[in-house]
Image (tube, rainbow, N blue to C red; front, side):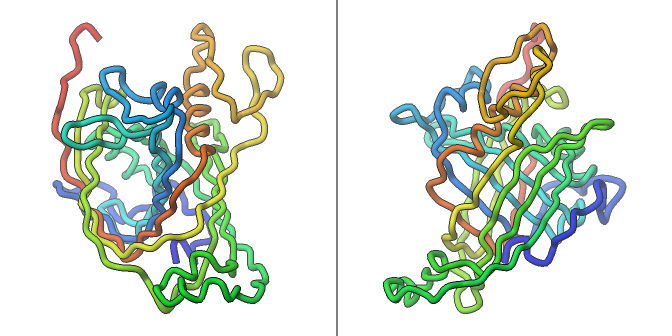
Length: 301
């Protein structure tokens, strides 16, 4: 089960290696939840570089998040939350754009920033499992059970709440809460698959070039109930000195220097958008290739 048995938050920087990553490709093993959302095109455009063309239809694109727990990696054991703003066009296919990456490992954060060009930040992942009583199963899911998908639509045994808090010394800020449905999948773990997920990165203060990299994934996959995402109810409006709704995507006055809050509002809007599909990856092996430079930073930038 994804993230099961890790109820306590790990200390930031808890890793196996202290001297950095080995040479690429980098191998990560563990489990993950990949959740696709319908994201408003205007929200996604605010997160991606201007030179990209958004893949959209009827005012929406495909975004969502990737929540992973790695038990073996060059950085040791750590958790990761990747907020995917949307898909950008890359003939003859499309690529995902990560608007935010949160990890509870200093080594993984440093590597993501400098080597892969990701907008990585250090965060704390606090996990709590709540047991609930399961009502009798419905007779209507008999066929789904026969093909191995009935568990995704049965009443859950437990709920796991994952609270993600970004750490910017000396400040910390709650980003979101993710409530996962924990279902017992002892009989069926899903088919084994292999796939490639091309992605763009870069255009950050740590790696200003526009980069492209690929993740080769091998895992067992199954459909699960989408996780429920919530954000902090209120945040402090620095311009007016009073609380305001965090879920909004209001622009931030550039004179206040508070661009970071605006970016967090956009990422939260992606997380709070309508989920359409949730896939659990177990027995996950992810091989990340070294990125290549697609477009170097302009000297005039």
